Image 1 (cartoon, helix red, strand yellow):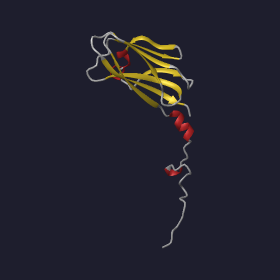
Image 2 (cartoon, helix red, strand yellow):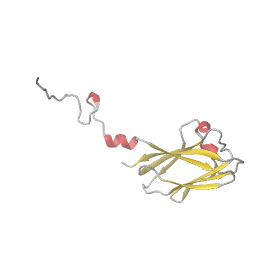
Image 3 (spheres, one colour):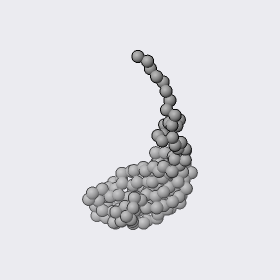
Image 4 (cartoon, one colour):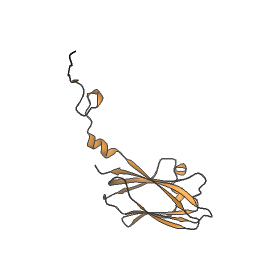
Length: 142
């Protein structure tokens, strides 16, 4: 038996089919990341959370607050702070629910430095505990 080693002529070095060479760095610059955080805020309580992104951020696209089934966030105030700048300050948390804004996230475009101090503060004025997901949408540094 004879083994034949042959390279396909139309296969580029990055392995993309069709002979097209994709610039990986440019592709990665356009790729967004989503980091999700789950919090429970006690009735009548305040909770401040430090957000640590899984990758070094380049640009914040926006965020969404998704209540867990049975949780009511209509009586909750939400403050989102990056490097001392309040992007939201006591806004109604329900305004950031994708069910109300009819898209994936609420736009809060903001450049990131990569070593940002990000905090989320929730004030639950409701009569019951509330559990929600905070999803942060951003572009990573490449």
